[in-house]
Image 1 (cartoon, each protein chain N blue to C red):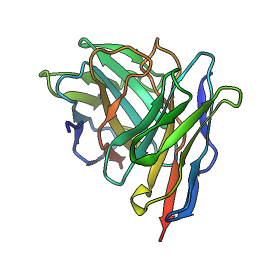
Image 2: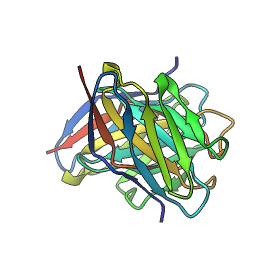
Image 3: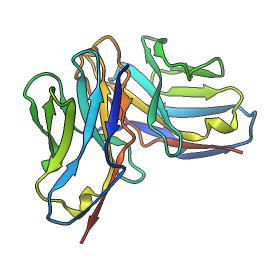
Image 4: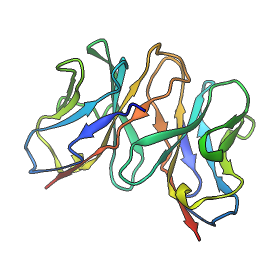
Amino acid sequence: AQSVTQLDSHVSVSEGTPVLLRCNYSSSYSPSLFWYVQHPNKGLQLLLKYTSAATLVKGINGFEAEFKKSETSFHLTKPSAHMSDAAEYFCVVRPSSNTGKLIFGQGTTLQVKP
Amino acid sequence: EPEVTQTPSHQVTQMGQEVILRCVPISNHLYFYWYRQILGQKVEFLVSFYNNEISEKSEIFDDQFSVERPDGSNFTLKIRSTKLEDSAMYFCASIAPPSGGPGDTQYFGPGTRLTVL
């Protein structure tokens, strides 16, 4: 069965320091992987996606993620956190092209301290 | 930039009542989805809808649930007789054409928080 595990429910960093949000997935097929962000009272916004092209994916707002098949990981990173990055982050997998269904991780709350 | 919108933002209802949650997908989108997130749990897929019919549904989406695209712009989720466990945040999403590829981006609305008392 396909699943997504976000290893941290809450991450706290200081402004200007690196961000690492961890995600592991389980999929029988070559999946598509996504990171979404949700700011309070806003919809889920796509940060970036992996669809079997380059394994290092660059997204909006300076975020990037690396697909590592051997580790079944898709961790999200940013070199320098900004206060506006504080939000809920979801790692998401679309298990195969036969389904539009997305499978979500449980979310990671990113806190950015001044 | 076009957005998916959802109304109301918060709905409170009594157990056993019917509720209709409304979504307005982005105008040229063709595939539509509902997801829900019970407090403290993962976002879960409910149903996908294309060409005026359900294309896929989860085990959660039982006979108490139905979806409709009544007028070419709105996409609704109806819960016929709400239960306490239906309390959750409900998200609508849509995909732009051409659709069906594995990397298609689903655009999400802000959600409707449903509270069943």
